[in-house]
Amino acid sequence: MANTVLIGAQWGDEGKGKIIDVLTEKVDWVVRYQGGSNAGHTVEIGSERYVLHLVPSGILRPGTRNVIGNGVVVDPLALVKELGDLEQRGVNLAGRFFLSDRAHLVMPYHSLLDASREQAASAKTKIGTTKRGIGPTYGDKAARTGLRAGDLLDELFPDLLKRRVEEANRVLGAWGEAPLDYARLLADCQAATAKLAPYITDAIPLLNEAIARNESVLFEGAQGTMLDIDFGTYPFVTSSSATAGGACTGAGVAPHRIDRVIGVVKAYTTRVGEGPFPTELTDATGELIRKIGHEFGATTGRPRRCGWFDVVVARYSAMLNGIDAWALTKLDVLDAMPVIKICTAYECAGQRLTSVPANIRQLERCTPVYEDFPGWQCKTTEATSFAELPAGAQAYVRRLEELTGVKVGILSVGPRRASTMQLWPLAG
Ligand code: GDP
Ligand code: IMO
Ligand code: MG
Image 1 (cartoon, rainbow, N blue to C red):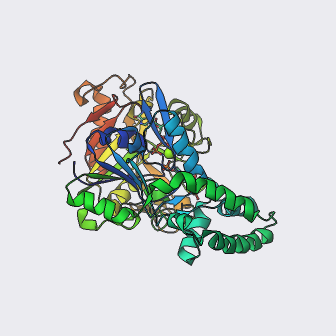
Image 2 (cartoon, rainbow, N blue to C red):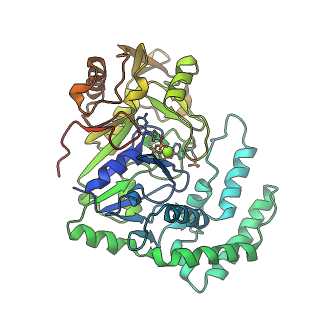
Image 3 (cartoon, rainbow, N blue to C red):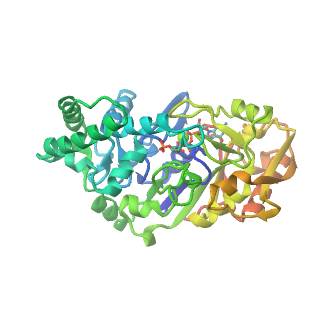
């Protein structure tokens, strides 16, 4: 298989984990390139359900090798726990899991600061973060005050950590938080290092040499385009580059090594956390989608906000990421709907908008322009080919392709591997 970047095209939780798992049947390497343990990627295999936060979703296919790239921010304690849980469930890590020595470390002071900022914010300014320390860690990276996975192996690590803790304690003090105990944190880090040391490596030659040998790489995006630090609904975003461009800087692979981009979209839209969401349904229909789609956060358990499919967002995402094909997920969740709406444009102060405005105050004022679509009102979950889908469901998929200008390459009608159809041969 060619080298593929897979990204979320909405506000995250599009079903990336499931699609990664399906695609890894034919992939040699899976690389996470941004985000951290704010991600929750669900993979269901038979009766087993796995939720991956830091480890690439390819770890569940014994033939793949998995890398956490330099663009990811890694909480070493959370990673040790995740790896331990996987091993307990029979997943073999030896020779199959690698952590870039350049990946930045999330330390407890980052998570505390994340939570303090959220607590101090007003209802209007609160972001609704996952409180996993993501923003403060990327902040330290940009400020050049971060610690990296490779530092764990350095004999100077105790000194480096001491300086960071001293500064963090001054900041935490200003937020009214108790200071961190340096000795205890050092002991925790040393215990984590004992477990992580065999996996920490220079991932750049590892990946580039694999590519030179014609081995295939799947870049696993986390979050989604509308949560991207540059292109999302800033400031209600995460702190990393969740769009396809992030794969190059977050893995150390050149742009021309990437053959294609797959965008994962739900047949409707969800968002968890605060911020504008033009097609949000705050009524019984939104409630029904949440219930049928089990729309509760895989990381925090928070109920996800639900709404109709937004073509404006999908087209914006297709443009930004250069999406070659959609992986359209959760079509089955709409099975019972008598009427399905598709947002084709926004109306804002008498103007019709067909692209996402940068200004969130303007986006907040946008109301969706809908096209009504008749529901098919029968089950799609048993279908194994496009032809077996009810005519209404086929027409809905074709309409989304028409409106977004991108073909659906993969169609998902359930959480398991078997509930997946390949509609459009993905070259390579
Ligand atoms: P991710 O963060 O993009 O990997 O998505 P999450 O795992 O957070 O959320 C997607 C949820 O939808 C998970 O519980 C998946 O098991 C589930 N899922 C994925 N594809 C489908 C589908 O086609 N139909 C249904 N009903 N559930 C799906
Ligand atoms: P996956 O990879 C959905 C959201 C949070 C919040 C905002 C900032 O599973 O799709 P952060 O903790 O990153 O500082 O929070 O981003 N968010 C996600 N929403 N899916 C995710 O990941 C998310 N990761 C972060 O809810 O609104
Ligand atoms: Mg998720």
